[in-house]
Image (cartoon, rainbow, N blue to C red; front, side):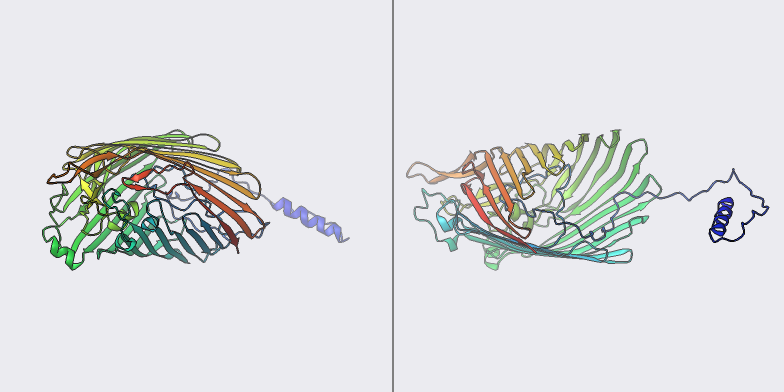
Length: 580
């Protein structure tokens, strides 16, 4: 380096027309054996990443936010394994949509969000969908759903502070009555069910991407109430932390707490004093400490245990597990990358207590009867064994599959209740009298080609080994969805979804011979399979204005996800969108 500097000085001197310089005698020492050493770096897994900086100004490109049909009632009863999350919507600004359709449907959506930056982020999402009439007796099967969700996060040094706020109001009707008995349709106000939901959560997490210690701590509250005087107050605690022991290993801890108070109206509790504790308190705590190891050769290992406690203070004669008690399950997982980043096998032993709440149950099945308190109990899964793989055999192609078997206690099923005299048919929770063996197989496939098109398949199969119950009421064995999108041009985007749910079982009350002491008796019935085809399209007229069309149940099948509750036939929504 010294020779280079001297030569440069000489050249500069010549350029100025001065006397040519001379190179002075000097001794240069070259050290060959010197070795620079750095301290061992720590490797962190699943770190909370720093939000990317704002995007540079560039030419406008078309995006299609909210390019999906409004959520219907095709809710799978088991979680579907996901290969990869949906593509993130670019945070490029705000948009609003408004549409109308048959059945007196009104659809609205507004999305307000900050652009990505290093200081803060916020978002507000407004949704509304309502139908003035439905598949049974017009207004008697009307539905309305309105929700507001706000999120925000502020980055303060190495910490991030965040909060979320949710509110929803939903109105349904118990239109599953028997027309042979209910010869005159009831007044809609007499069979109406309304849910009010409210949730808030605040949290703090570290914001340093290379931190040796990662954490997130949160506290929240959820409130639920229906038209029949039932309410649920749920105070929530959650936390997770990880500490890197070295480049290949770390210690992790995940914990959750839920403290519920259920209340019934005074009149209902007086009618059924044996079954009601008013109020009823349900507490739940669960923690999973684990050691994780990730070897360079492709071996991954998790060794831990899940410790949980859930109390069920009311012995009601319907739940197989009435008393609160603790549980310990293994949390062991072994994985091996046979082909790095291409093919991984894994297997393990697991288990956990699943928190069950009226807030969540009524989202899964909005026709739960409200005239009496549901017998809600937390489900205890495990121990169960599982095996699976993830693969990316070709560019743009992802595959995943998982099979598991285990025992479940307090696994709930949905069956009809309250329609023995032909009145409104609200659903109730029923349980088997013993542990239920559950065999589950999940599969997921996703293929995308550049930004032109993508297609995927999700499937979930469950088999239940029952003892006392005749059928797994309300739980279809197979839930599957085939979906895809296609960018037909720079302004036109097309999409399709095809869903298939296998038939499931329920109990109806059927008429007996005239003069019988019990004119109507229960009888198990099987629903038809769910076959639903949905198509959608959106066209950008200008960079700010677009038109869209959504079509659901285009096969026009009046299938029943839940017995006695047929869905609407072909329903179409058309409207306009504005980006600002």
